[in-house]
Length: 115
Length: 112
Image (cartoon, rainbow over all chains, first blue to last red; front, side, top):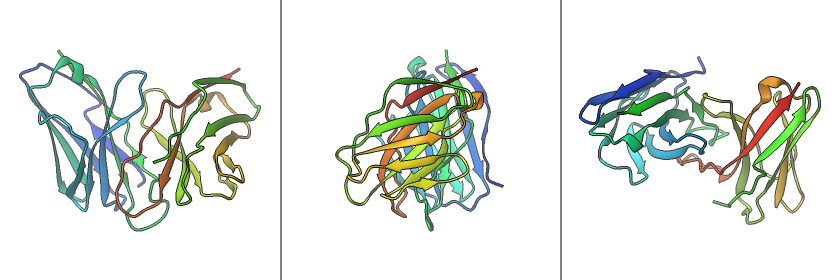
């Protein structure tokens, strides 16, 4: 299984809602990532988890709350988002114990719309 | 990480080779060149990487100049499914989980 799955594919939420994005991989990768991609822009890193511990937070607002409950699962909890947070949210994973270390496997993304 | 420069867009005829250039004049000795692509509405996909030798895999070839200041990704026989944004990324190779910094990339359009 060389796939990263993300659910839901699409999400529409109001500014007062609480929702969660889910990402799963069964490749034994111990590094997992959240990226945000606005239309016609490159992906931008949000968070990095290494061995289920948060290792990088790229100054992301607290209305985004990541969680890594186990080595296969990565969640992104959303609360009180703004319309400008509408974007494609990408999850990725990678090896930490063999080359190529920077080969990241990306999921198809969740298209989020905040009304 | 070294900064990369890529043309914003390129066209290629179907069946012909697509040659995508990337400049990385400030690359350090321990930095690798990685290529990813992103087909519309999909997540990015790793293609190939290299340090100083030319590399080839089932998807593409990577040619790195001797001074390592530029590289070219070659898709030998482009198909319509190769239409995508191609990103050149320079990065150290390390077991530490680190971010990929995507530049603007090159939009490759393969024409029938």
